Image 1 (cartoon, helix red, strand yellow):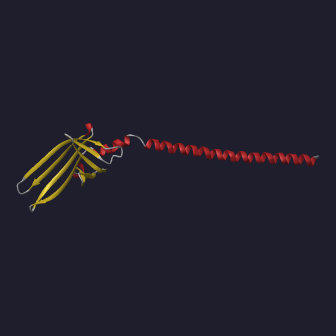
Image 2 (image 1 turned 90 degrees about the horizontal axis):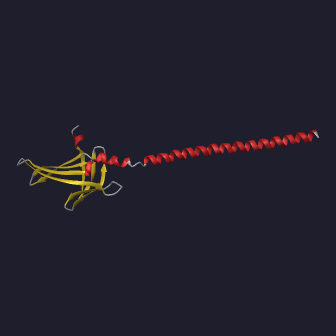
Image 3 (image 1 turned 60 degrees about the vertical axis):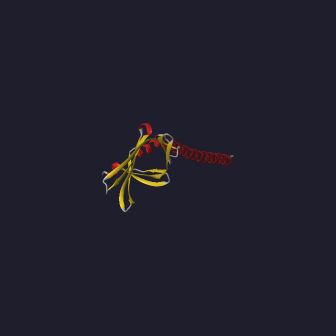
Length: 169
């Protein structure tokens, strides 16, 4: 009877030990599951906050300033300095295009100034639509706005412009 009692106690202890091991493993898996849940929550929160609409205004802030491109054209053996400016204003999405041509031999400067309104063609913000009025529209394609440089293609011509404030430094 004593042996049988020892065997029963041993069996109960082994069953309890087995149950404890199973329970311990389940708790460890739950901890892992909880960590996984917390990690997924952090990832989702990061994605949601990264997709904030305010990021779209950042490119407008970089765009809205005065940009200039200076080139030299050779006409009849004379170098003519050409200056092309684009001025973008955030308020009212307005702007101005200024083209100047300076001829050294005559000392004259011809200036052409045109006002426009601007908008992004779509959400990709890769093409600006410049509306000059009376149905005159230009597309500034493949727009790339960096801190001090603006580049793209207008009317088939590739241009790269520099922030005027950066040139004055």
